Amino acid sequence: MKTQKLLLTFLKDSVDKPIVYHLVKDFDLITNIYRARITAEEKGSLILDITGSEENIDKGIAFIKEQGVTVDDAQKSFRWDEAVCTSCGNCLTHCPVNALHIQDTATMKVIFDSELCIDCLGCIDNCPYGACQSIFQE
Ligand code: SF4
Ligand code: SF4
Image (cartoon, rainbow, N blue to C red; front, side, top):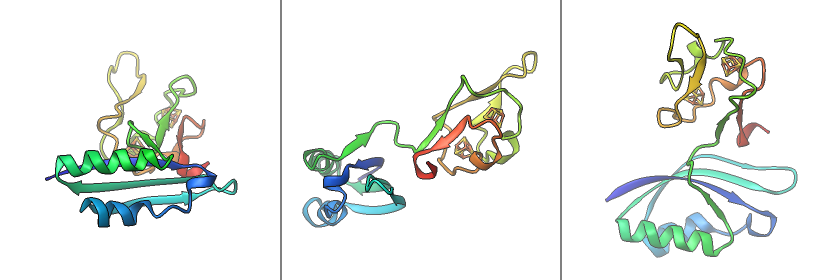
């Protein structure tokens, strides 16, 4: 058994497909939904964990793709724009896992470690320059 996090993007013609239902029923996967959103243009985004055998997870992901739904390898909705970041440091105390941090105190440049990020989105409202964004807050 293993657990894999997925970020799915549904276009307008696939947004009403019962993907999660089929993951549970046809592929014996346990699902845990973290966030879901449908935009005004009826584009959908969904973050969920799926748990099951490696074989069933692979089959489930192949099924999702067959439905015209995009599976994002980044597995997170959070995006950090290094070019926009001014290293002001305002976000640092709002990141619970130190994914945004200062690596070198000589330069005081803020950097982002995607591996550490848990996609909590706590930094977004605390970035005055818009360097922190999420597809769930567009
Ligand atoms: S989304 Fe959460 S974990 Fe990721 S960088 Fe922002 S505050 Fe840190
Ligand atoms: S608050 Fe925004 S601009 Fe400031 S260091 Fe953090 S990501 Fe960079």
